[in-house]
Length: 185
Image (cartoon, rainbow, N blue to C red; front, side, top):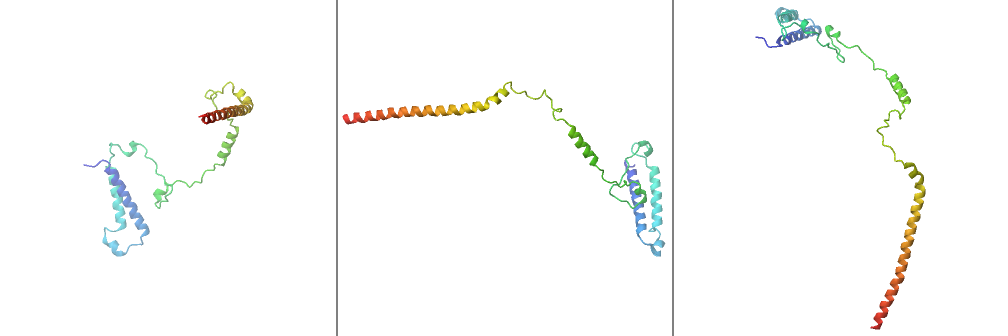
């Protein structure tokens, strides 16, 4: 009984082993004769075994749905943007080196469009609150009203002052009469 997806994982594991062996052989100096005579530790034999097992797993493992990879459709493409692979098979998946885009023209075009923009065109007149019908009259008369308000305040102060003077005279008379009445008793 095979676990669903185990075939794909086996393939990937065997391919990784094959790549690791190839890298080890690439960077490792020629092995001494004793290792070659040992038999199973031979790098050539290991790579051959891995290649055979990869082929065997690929041909014997159907996908989870029972369809082959050709029938499932196209898989997403792998692209290396920052990683520089050492393997020749992976170098074809590297993204081409690009330069940052120039945006001078875009900025100039945006500024030119904004210069042509009329701010009153974008305003919806139906949503604006109208001014009261007498706003211009209030504006014109406001200076005259300020002058009249000052005069009114002065007149009120003058009236209050006169009233207090009149009360002081009456108060003095009342005090004098009270004093006269005490002397009589």
